[in-house]
Image (cartoon, rainbow, N blue to C red; front, top):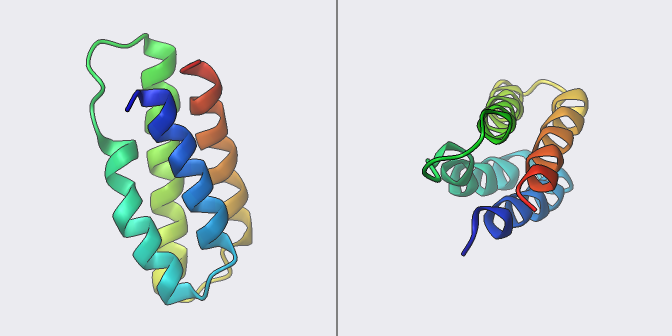
Length: 90
């Protein structure tokens, strides 16, 4: 799969996890976080920054879920950052 395909897969997982119960959402995020962390070889700085931003935003959602905090704002940021990554990998 290409980086674009994997990034799109991550957006779908995030939207699925957003509507799941917190423990189920954490399980989904734990399975998918490697996609955002993974190195895709030589990329433009803009793509690398977008990937890194998506990874950090996803981690923020995970921390909020783990602590039992409302995760509405982190979800929006994680999805937006990942969608930006998708757009740049086209």
